Length: 341
Ligand SMILES: [Zn+2]
Image (cartoon, rainbow, N blue to C red; front, side, top):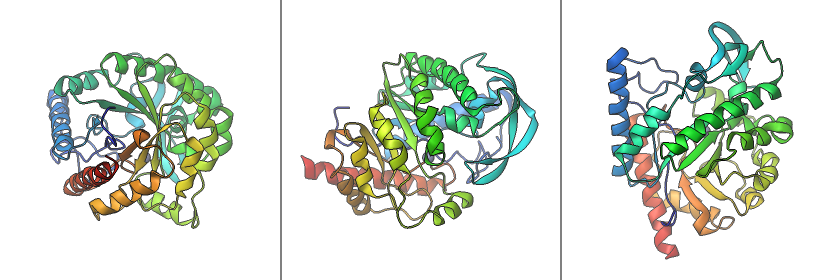
C-alpha cells in the first residue's frame, strides 16, 4: 500500500434487512434460489458502497454471501455431515450444536471464488478476503473420522490453500485467515497451529493476514472477557512464533481491550492491523479516540506497517452503527496521517 495508514474492517458487516435477519449471528436467509443469488450480489454492491462512502481503503466483502465465517466454508466441503450434529464447547467457552466429520474432508469446488470475482469487477481498490483458519475450523466441528485435532487441521490447511490460490487468481490482494482460536489453545498454536496456517498460505504471492481477536460482541464472549483479568496477555503466547512465520499482516483487537500495547513489540517487522474500533458496543468512537489508539500503537509499529482496522467483524451491529464506526475509523486515521506527514 502506498497510502499511509490504509483503513480496513476485520471482515463482516451487517447484512441488509431484506437479505437476512439483522443483528443475529447464523441468521437465516430471507431469500431463496435465484433470488438469493441476486440478493447476495446486491448486498455485495451495498457493502462496497458503504465502505467507499466511509473512505475505507481496503475493501472487504463484508461477508455478505455467507451466513457465518466458519460454518459456510465447511458447508461446501465433503466429508462433513450437517445432519449428524453434536454439541461441543467452542473455544472452551460456549456450547454449540455442530456438524460431524464422518469421512475424509475435501473441497469438491471453489467456495467464495465467484463472489470474489464479482467484488473484484466492481472496484479498483485493494480487496481483502477472509477465510477461517485451520484451528478455528476444527474447533467448530465434531470429529468422528480423524480423531485428531492436528490431523484434521492439516487436511483443512490443504483445502484452504486450494481456495486461497483461486482467490488470489481472482484478484484478491490480501487473504486473511481468522484464528480467534489462537487466543485460547496456546500449546496447540505453538505445536502445529502456526505450522498449519503456513501450509494454508504456501505458494501464495498476494499478501496474507491472520486475524486474532477476542470474538464478536456476543454475551458468551463478553462474559469470558470478564474472567481474563486486568491485563490480557494472550497474544504473548502466539506472537514470537508468528513473528518468525511467513504471514505478512497480523490483525489484532486493541480498542477498549486490556491488551497491553507493548505486546506488539513481539511482532516487530510485521504489518499490524490495529483494531481501533470496539465491536462489542453500539457507542460510536470519536475520531480522536481512534487516533489515540493509533498513536499508542505507533510506539511499537512503524508507520508504514500500521493498518487501522476494527477489533473484529461488525455483523451483529445495527447498520447505522457499523457505518458510523467505519467513518470514525477513517476520520481517526486521517488525523494521525496528517500528524505524520
Ligand atoms: Zn474477530
